[in-house]
Length: 297
Ligand SMILES: O=C(O)C1=N[C@H](C(=O)O)C[C@H](O)C1
Image (cartoon, rainbow, N blue to C red):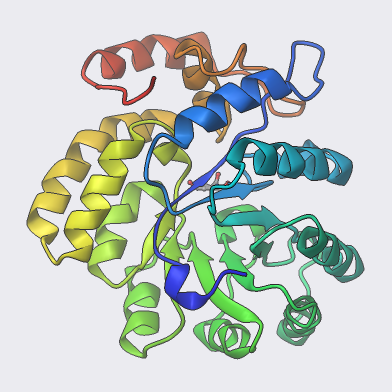
C-alpha cells in the first residue's frame, strides 16, 4: 500500500488506447507503458481523466490494471486507480475492487454534477476512506463544478485513510496554506503551474504532460526537491510550449494524437463525446515539436 512518504515525484496518468473500432488496444498499451517504464517515474495512475474515465467501463479498468501488473512483472511501481464517481455506493464498491486487483492507492475525485452539500461530500470521503486502501483526494473544480473550501479539504485530509491530495485548483494560496500547516502531501495536477506549485510546497505531480518529455519532468522535479528552484524553472520553461498545446483542446485528445505521432500507440481514437484534435492544432503542434527532444525508445 502507498504511504504519505511515497506521494512525491512524477506520477504519470496513463491514457487508454483504443482500436479504430473503439475497443481496448492492449498491444499499443503494452508498447506505451513499456516506454514509460524506461524512466524513473514514481508511479502510474490508471483511469484518471487522461485515461478517459467517463467512457471506460469498470471491467475495462480491471483488464487494464491486470495488463499493467503483467507488464510491470516483478517491478514494484506504485499503481493508483481512479475509483471516484458522483455516486458514493459505486465509489466504495470500485475502491473495494481496486484493493483486490492490486492497486496501491485510489484517486477519488470530489463528487461532481449533483452539487452535494459539504456534509454529503464529507460522508462520501469518509465511506470511501474506510474501505482500507489509501485514498488520494482529487480536487479539480474546472471539471467537477465544485470548489471545496480549505476547511473541507483539511477535514478530508484529516481522515485516517486519506494519504494526500491531487490539486488542480491552480491556487498557489491553497498550496501555500496546506504546505505551511504541514498537511499531508499535495501533488500538483495542474501542468502549466507545476514548477510554481513545487516552489510553494507541492510534493510532486500527477501530470498528463509528463507522458512526453518524461525525463525532463523528472529532472526539473529533482532540482526543485534539492532546493534549486532557479534551474528547475529554467528547465520547466522549455516544456511550457508543449504543455500549452497539450491543453489547447481537452485532455487527453492532444496527448493521444502526439503519442500516436510518436508511434507509441497505433492511433488517436477517443470515445465520444471526446473527439480527435482539430487540424489547426495539429499544424501548430508541428512547430513546437521541432524544438523538442523526445526521450522515447
Ligand atoms: O488524468 C489525470 O490524472 C490528469 N488529468 C488532468 C485533466 O485532464 O484535467 C490533467 C492532469 O495533467 C492529470
